[in-house]
Length: 221
Length: 227
Image 1 (tube, each protein chain N blue to C red):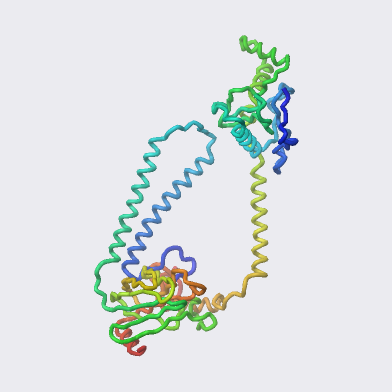
Image 2: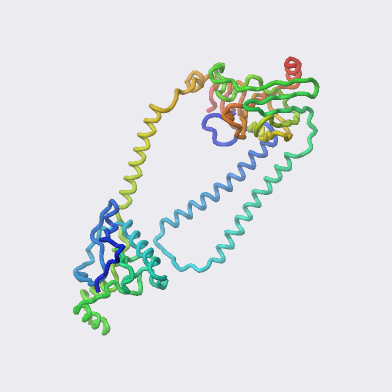
C-alpha cells in the first residue's frame, strides 16, 4: 500500500530540514526493508527537537483527521487506514513506549515467515531473528529512543548570539541616543551628597548612617 | 531618603513604620519560602526521567494545596489587619496641617494659630547647591515639630496626586473635592523625603515632599518668621 498524497499536500518537506541541527532521513511506514541490517551500534543523528516535533505533529495530525481515534494508541501512526499522509509517523516516545500497532505493517515473505516462526517456541529463534522481530514491532530500542542530542549547543549558541547582539545595540544607544549625565553623578557631587546625608543622619538605625563611625570619622569595620 | 544598594525599606521614623517594617520582614519570609519550594519542585520536575500519563485524580495533594495556602493567607492577614487598625487609633493630634496638591507642586497651610500658607516647588537640577539631592529638594520645606502627633489633611486643587513620605510610612491620595486625613509622628529630627505617588501629568516625577522635623521651639520660631 503506497501512501497517497492529498491534493492540498505538495511534496512533503521533511520537517527535520527546517531546523538547524539536521538529522538523517525520516523513516516512512510501509515496507520495512533493511531493518535487519540494523545492529545495536547503529545511531541516528536525529535531535531531540525533531523527535518531539514528530511526536507532536503526529498527535496533531491524528486530531485533525476525521474524528478522534481511540486514546489507547497515541503513539502509533494514523495512516494505516490511509486517512492522512503524515510527514512522519510512528515515533517512539518515552512516555508511551509500547504502542498497540507494530512499526512495520507490510511484511515481505521473509518477514512473514519469521512471524510464523515467532508463533512457536521462542527458544528456536536465533539472536538475529529476535532482533529482527524486535525491529519489526518497535522502531527503536530504549537506548536509541532515550539518546541525548546536540540541541543544547544550538540553543546556547543562539542565546549567546542574541546576548552579544543586544550588547551591541545597547552600546550604540549609549553612544548615540542617551543625553548627557546630570552634574549630580560626578564623583565630587556624590561625595558632597554623601557627606550631607551623613551629617543629617539619614537612615541611622540600620541603613547608611548606621554604618558610619562618627567618632573616628570613617566607615565602621 | 534612599541610599545606594539599598535592599529593603528606609529606616522607620514613626512607630507605624516600624510595625510595617516587621510586617514586611514576616511577609517576605513567607514569600521566599514559597518561592524556594516552587523552584525546588520545578527543578525536580525538569530533571526526572519518570513519566506518568494517566493521572485521574489527586485528592490528597489537592486538599493539601488548598488548605495550606489558606492558612498562609490567614497568617499574613492577621498582622496586616492589626497594623491597619493601629493606624486609625485615636491619638489627639496637637497640630493640623493642610496640604493641597497642584500640578505640579504642593502647597501647605498652617492655620491653627496664624495664617501661614506657602508653595513647595522642586529645585531644578541646574539650581541645586553642591551636595543636594537631585529631583528631591524643594524651595520651602515642610517644617514640623518632632515627637508630636500631627494631623495631615490632604486634598488636591486639580487632578489626583498622592502625598507620600516612605520613612514615616505615609501615603495618602490627594483627591480633588475630598479631604483625606493621616497622622504624622516623627521620633527623630531630620529631613525626610517623599515624592508624589499618583500620576498627575508631565511633571509627576518632579513634585517632591520634604519634611523638616525640628524641636518644638525651632518650629515656633520658624512659623513666626514665615508668616
